[in-house]
Length: 233
Image 1 (cartoon, rainbow, N blue to C red):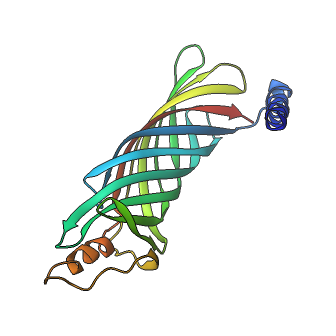
Image 2: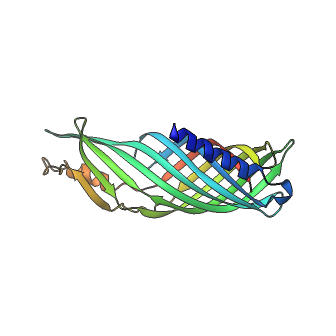
Image 3: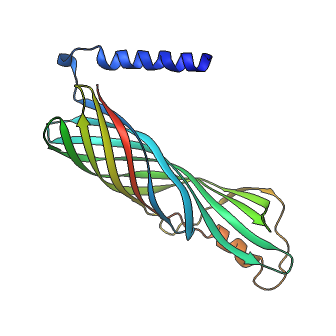
């Protein structure tokens, strides 16, 4: 009950802040919140699921058709690693990324009828690559591996459809192609939790399995679709 009351109070305060000011005091800044999902391709895995993003963006409009925009976004994704089978061990793994990204770039706005607008925006920036792996043996958790975060360059090209419902509030849908470059950088292991891997049973096991865990580059490609809200400040 208390949580619901607090959330209701925050919503009322925010609503009043957003709409109480007169249109004459509108600035050239807009801010947006959005969430999305779609298709993800990562060099770590062939089987992937659980991909979603959420974040915000800030736009400054020089003219009606031209502006600059920055996007801060959080990405969560899971994928399945290749499994290895030995005499006494059957290893499999799950690869997880929890990555924030920051991109900035120009935005070209195409006005349509009745407060609608289509925008196209190329951006560039950085992605903080944060990787962890859960290793299972015969379906039971065997070890959790966490890697040191590394900063990677990122690029995106997005299209956005905006429908202004009032002077200050709009709903949006978007489609974004996002990719980063990893320069074949190998993640550095930060810590291992759980059981140690066994000594090699034969020449390739488990050394080959461990080598594939440590040699996963962070190249990521997304086709991200979603919905959001935009506020004129």
